[in-house]
Length: 241
Image (cartoon, rainbow, N blue to C red):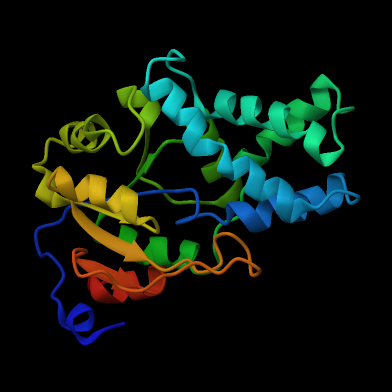
């Protein structure tokens, strides 16, 4: 971390921490690879995970452009899955198998620092999801993983996928707060930029292995974020928890 990022004082008036989930809180790549190894060991789990995730933004773009009506992430994930299965030798999967595999997104494991970090942060802040994942997915994920959210909010509530301003501003309105009193915690600079444009504070979390050990991600600090932290433990330290 650079000296400026280390010395920057965290905002004192933040009341709610809004968390991006996929990649920031949970390890989607590693979780999918592990499950593929159990269910379909003959298939390259890394390739499946990356292809599935690569379809995410194009699928959301179809909704945001109006080509598709409002569609939950569960249903977008299924559209992507059906498209990529033949490319990976899994065209033979029946409906029950496809439904089960699609639900892997409900079964993603948190990064090792997450649960202890969230428990520390929860003592001082309201903790809430701000994810493009749908409510059912996020709730089942939290139940399975023991994620101690105070509230679960989703793009589904606002009918607007991030980085649409309606998601960030709608989130602040739910808590009857000016945007500056909400901090988005995320591992993705495009998400943080969208939040910042709406007046939210931002904390970047390094997740260099989000796409797997074979595909390390650039995680250098950017001065526009209020905080830059290695993990949730450091975030809790910086926020005085």
